[in-house]
Length: 220
Image (spheres, rainbow, N blue to C red):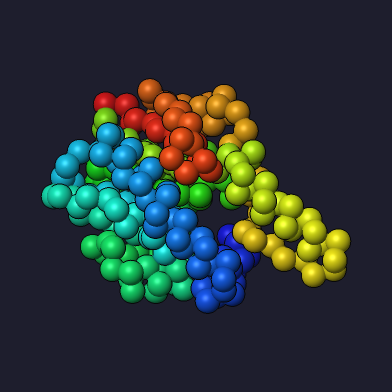
């Protein structure tokens, strides 16, 4: 299953990298999502330490993060996405690895974030991933998850586009399957708590009109 998912994402990045659609998404990441992410990272992350974007893609949403004394890393299992990310030169280091089995020691990371990642996994998979996040985070550290809203204007637009393409017989899938889009707070809060996070907070998508910002803190 994971090998299939990996091939789906490799194909996604290879096919989209020079498309008009990807250029639009790139602009959106750099000039809308990036502002939202910067705001919450400044709010929840300390000014120094090691911080990882888990499921980083091209890292474009992270372009406005203030580095200060922070060491920023990117982790993704797509070699294509990481190659693009390296060209962007935003992070200090890049790791190709599986989000289900992170190559870090326990309590070695000072903060974790990602953008548009968690919705691609089932509830069971989310629990596995969040437990891994909890394992590698230091006590009291936060994870910040930008989680796409199922009724966000962009999602409704892409869904309509996919439905029309299916009817026309030219099925175009904008993104890989997303079984866990943000619908309600409770199921997300429950899985974060089960994974060992407390003080779970939800911030509405005021900045980019797309992503709820979900924040969890590892128990001290």
